[in-house]
Length: 80
Image 1 (tube, rainbow, N blue to C red):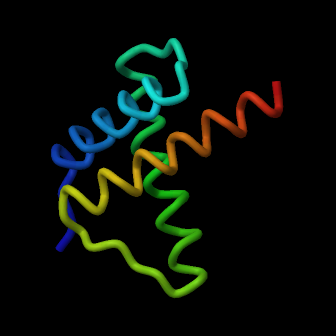
Image 2 (cartoon, helix red, strand yellow):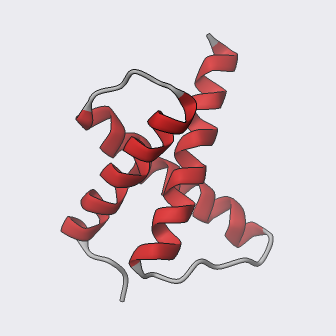
Image 3 (cartoon, rainbow, N blue to C red):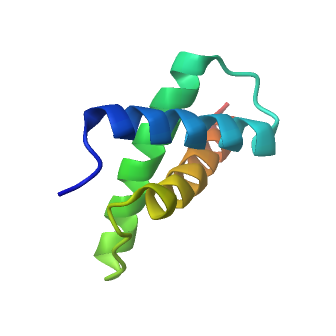
């Protein structure tokens, strides 16, 4: 069934915020939400290509979102 829109925004915001703290990125709340949501989507896609599926519950999606957002921040820094 999935998390739903509101839960995805909350989990994405938390994931982006935690990732920005880990990576010491100075981002705002909107950027944190976007990083977390896009990070989760991108990493879920990558994981599904290798046959790994994270459960559609808060904790697994939070972990995937954090790792995905960290990868996005890292990639942005490498491009810049």
